[in-house]
Length: 224
Image (cartoon, one colour):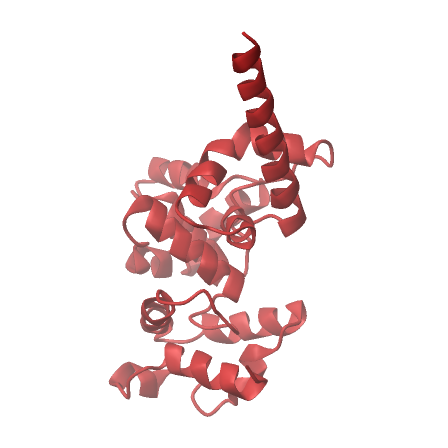
């Protein structure tokens, strides 16, 4: 598939209908190529452009609906990178519902950004950030907070590395259940990595370690 074809499909996913929200999109007439460059710097610049868009939530809703039928995702659309949209898709599948877009947009307002910023910098997971926000009277969930963090330019990962030591072992110890559940639902390693917010290599090694542990446990049962 050519780059031109991918660009056309991704743009169609973002704006599948000629609608009123489509005409208000900040990217309309801005030149679509910039949103489909693969470099991290280009993606950050595109996300910043989306951040100011008045129909950001409409765009994300449209692209998520269109991409639900395919594993192929390209470019920054709806304010998210391809990996973030993969993660969001699996978030919705695991939880059985999507994020609260109205709350996510509210968290982008200056007053809530001021509250959210120290939580992001403290290395908390989205669920932990959501719990802290409940103290301030905002009832929300980790998926919604994660989306807001993404829209604000953050990572919003479920895995936070506070040290460099034994990452694979810690990944297995802390996230084996969700990795197993994702794989049972058909997620490939790259999608598990996107969901957790970690590098692909760590998921591959973690899954190998989990399989080795499973086989060893089965051997012990047979020996007993």
